[in-house]
Image (cartoon, rainbow, N blue to C red; front, side, top):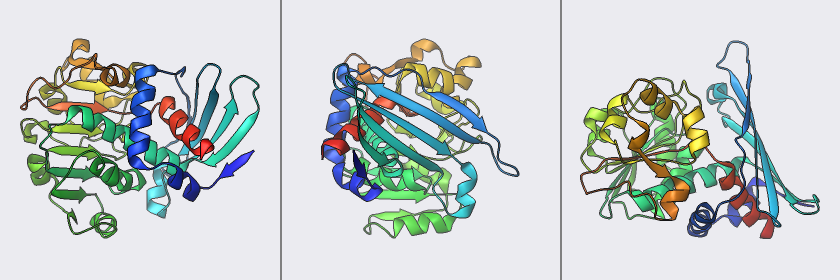
Length: 309
């Protein structure tokens, strides 16, 4: 059985090829049951989460990711997500590869976000705002730059020093900012990767035609954008998968429960978007939203690419 380190996984997943293979897989589909999730209490800290996410292609490969998400790790300067992935032959059941899951998770998440922006954002976008400065946020920058040419990339984080440290890893077009509201009002594309229950992005500030990418929230309590953001995007909302988003994404479940948006305001999922069956952008002034909670198909694609490298 092959074993891949995070560094080897990174080398196996170049952005443009990963985005292309994700688009093809979403369009064709794989088997992916709803992930199992368990809450793990951590004394004196926010609860952690343990998840198992399998996906397979009939007669091909099966990949399963197990991960532990520890929100308290940010205070320890450790990644919030710790994961491993195993690839099996879906016919014989033989394990073929094992790999560290941190880099895989970050890259497949960012690549799916960029794929959504490629298909939903306006063609002439110039300003990208990243909300958050963790591992996922650091990957969102090159992923989004692989599908659009940005003149400016701004990073905001609750801890300004983290935003500054992340910006320093890139060229001069990438800068750290401290005024989130002003940046939201100016951004053409906003990609948020935070773990928060209190919405950071105010819908009233979104400019006409903006594309909003919500990556961080993965429970019904978490919110990255307020109700007005979802209301303004009515009809222009895409989710990664219906099963995941409708059960787990607070940015979707809360405004639905409160009647702020209706089920018909969700234009489709990533499979329908990649097949051209969902058309969320009606005009250059339409605000669009992509809500990601993470799907096993993304791990499957990234793990299959890595195992074959």
